[in-house]
Amino acid sequence: MVRIKTNVYSHKRKKRILKEAKGQWGDRSKRYKEAIKSLMGSRQYSYYDRKKKKGDFRSLWIVRLNAACREEGISYSRFINGLKNANIGLDRKILSDLAITSPDVFGQIVQTAKNAPAVKTQKVEKEGKPVVAKTAPTKSEKKATAAKAKEDKQSSVSKRTAAKA
Image (cartoon, rainbow, N blue to C red):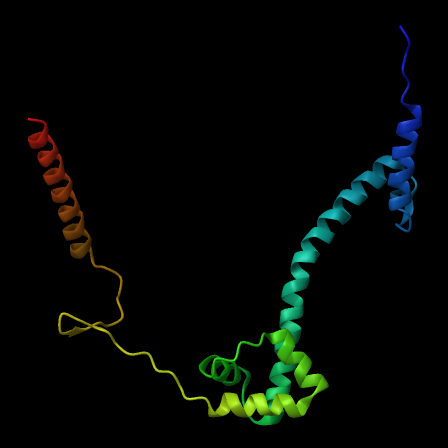
């Protein structure tokens, strides 16, 4: 039987790895095993940093917007709240770009956000009683709900047995 050698392919693979590791320091660019280890780490960092880059850009846009808003005499948080109240759906990237490239348009948007009416949340009434912010249940409330759940379960079991009979 003919013996198949894979020297060509393994040499090609090693050349590709070493070419990719070119520019790294010391044995990382010269030795195959070290190059593989180094590339695995660099690929992990590149994956992580591709995800991190999105948050970094968002932070940059927020910093730029904050500076531009301060020049217009409003804080960043009040500006964003005003945009939401005025139903302006521009994202931070576009707003940041507007603040840099066309400050007059950005100034108009800021004025719109300043003049937007504040939306207040209304308390909803249930059965004539106003609903207030709910706090954590006490031990007695937990016991009462557990007892009620147990009672409901028993009643459903008794209904099933009655239906079978």
